[in-house]
Length: 285
Image (tube, rainbow, N blue to C red):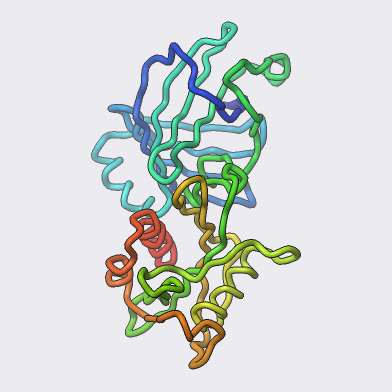
């Protein structure tokens, strides 16, 4: 089946939404270069396995319904690549519009999708009052990208860039945490975007200055963590190659190298703790 649809950001929830249904979905496999994904979805009381191929306005979709037992057996394999949302419907000019309200760390993102029978029909469609910017074909707003990387950066007015330094000790994944400048909380090294520098280069710099570690990031592996207000922390895992004895901010920060379970207990921010857990799952998968 060829799927032809357009997607818009929702500026305000319209009145008259119907048939609210909870959706849980995760990804068993994906190839971003080939624009292919294998998705597992629970839609209300039904479960589906879906293969999507292609990009942009028109995509090929193959979907089969599976049993609850099959879903439960496959679901653990989607760890670290999941999202949850509420879907409602509304009629607009003869078209059925699906409105998705994302939950958890993707809240308050809301998008509207409209499906068409042809490309020509889709081009004639005019968005209505509750639809904002069109994001059809924009990678950052695809469900796969949201499940992997979290909230798109340009969905918020302010963001910081952080590093999640990690290394293996005794066959276990360990992380490098630092305190804030007043030494009252355990956090990740982070800072503001720098002109002329890529985000992952900023993460490498902050890891060295604040935590005294040197390493490298995988640019495509990152996650957005919602902080207080409208701020977002873009976290890049950093594979540590060197731990420095002396570093620029050692005078006012403490540093510890701890296993995952201890790191999660030390981090007081629940959103940050959840993001560290998700990235850890992806590092070992």
